[in-house]
Amino acid sequence: MELVYQVMESLLPFSWISFDFMKNALLAVLLITPLFGMLGTMIVSNHMAFFSDALGHSALTGIAAGVLLGVGGSSLPMLAFAVLFALALNKLRERQTQNTDTIISVCSSLSVALGLAILSRGGNFSEYSSLLVGDILSISPGEIGSLLLVFLGTLLFWLLAFNRLNAVSINRSLAASKGIRVRLMDNLFAVLIACVVMLSIRWVGLLLINALLILPVASARNMAANMREYHFFAVLFSVFSGVMGLLVSFYINIATGPMIVIISAVIFFATFLYRQAAG
Image (cartoon, rainbow, N blue to C red):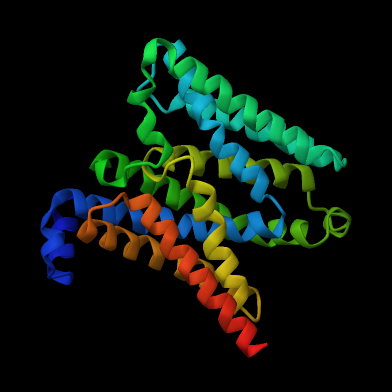
């Protein structure tokens, strides 16, 4: 890690890079934001924005489960709950009924309420309030290593499964006729979203994570003329928002997560106006 720090200081001769917490946060942003850009494209294409929002809110119950089991500091209970919750939500989506969104909303609300009820026992919720908006400045080198593994795993999955995921998002029946196991791809993608969301929730915040998944992608749709540009702009806008949000929050002393979302929203409105003017 020291070698990485030295390289960063040589490439970025700015005063803020002399702080170790800023180096850690920048590395985390450069790992998290491309993941959000990649996953967000498929989330939007599959009309899963509501799904990912519900999944983010379920983090509270996962954390509460860890507290009840006496392992509140571990991410494993939260991750396990998120995977089960994602698979259950996916099962609901498969039914394609008019009440699917309502049922998902009820499950999301119940999950948040259970988490809040358990974590607030004895007035202790203040210990977990940082989860609402996250704190990327507190990330440690070990946690950055975990994010790197998630990033590499997601990238490998994307390279191997993107064409099949894209086919499913375009036409499920046609994809099935071509021998693609639609339900398996749906479940694998849902589990991947669950893992990425849960492993980054502590630094991004459960109130903001869905915005970071959707806003850069929405901006990319305003600019892209084809699928390649769509993914390129999604990752570009996501990384740009993350880095600029980190720097602006450092200089004006506000929370990083909300600043990243604000910049993402500004980019969305700018690209929206550009599309209107060009269209």
